[in-house]
Image (cartoon, rainbow, N blue to C red; front, side, top):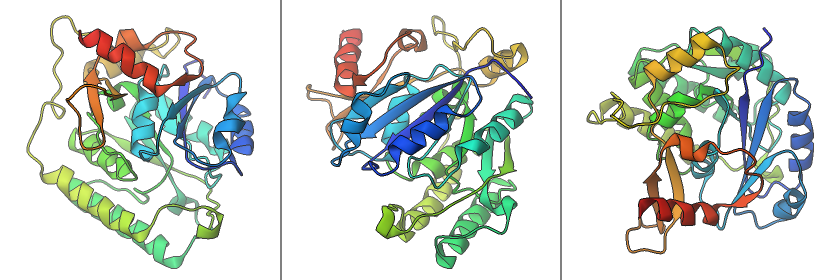
Amino acid sequence: MTSTALLTVIVPVYNEERTIAELLRRVRAVDLPKEILIVDDGSTDGTAALLAGVADVTVLRHPRNRGKGAAITTALAHARGIACIVQDADLEYDPDDIPALYDRYLRGDVDAVYGSRVLMGGQRHSSIFFYWGGRLVSLVASLLYGAKLTDEPTGYKLVGTSLLLSLDLRAQGFDFCPELTGRILRRGGRIAEVPIRYDPRGWDEGKKITARDGLRAMWVLLRERVRSPRSADVPEMRDGDDAVQVRDDAPQQQREEDARRWPPRTVVPARADGDERDREGLRIVEVPVAELREAGRGERDIRSESEQARERER
């Protein structure tokens, strides 16, 4: 299926100087209308220098490492596409598989599309322990939510932007993925899976996820299933709220469905100098979607967003 609707590719990066240039080349080569949002999550190697002269992408930076979930949340404040996909910078996932996920999403009968390494079959695993750990996480998700997921921990999750903005996602690290899955399924969202390729790297090559993250993923899935209902579960559009803004070339049916099902709840992570902070010195500021959808943002340090957010609060 061909489409002129924009896709947002979010690339969280932390100390990936060995792979970021090749990853960016391969993402650029994907034949889709897209924008690329890179978030340098406080890298201490040569990643920042490699990104300094990059053109035709938006580069955002965290002054310190805050985690994958925090990087994705930062990027979401800038997303202009009708859907977003997260592309890890380590080249374990092949960007050539992105069109298959996007085509499935554009059929209009699901809210998210996950790339399943299991459905592809016959692929190498980082270890048998991690393979069966991932299958266990998927089983837990399926049993808790009545879903049929073969690969919940997959790094390829393509989700409608308006849905993402409405979920009030708060996880800062790798637990962003199970939190996302739990909140989509708790809302009654529909997830499809398509086969994808996978080329795992070892810890000597910079792999960061551990067995502890798998245990936490199961805990987050359980927490999201049993937690008390909140406004994020049943969103309501208030008078004066901004409607979801997507490109005019998005499929009309998809735009209407997104606006009806998932009114936006946009969050912007901000570095605060005031006295209202969480334990990491950060705060969450809600601002209208329309104020964030500005053209030509280009490269920007995240601290400048803090100043704008505080000004809007006043």
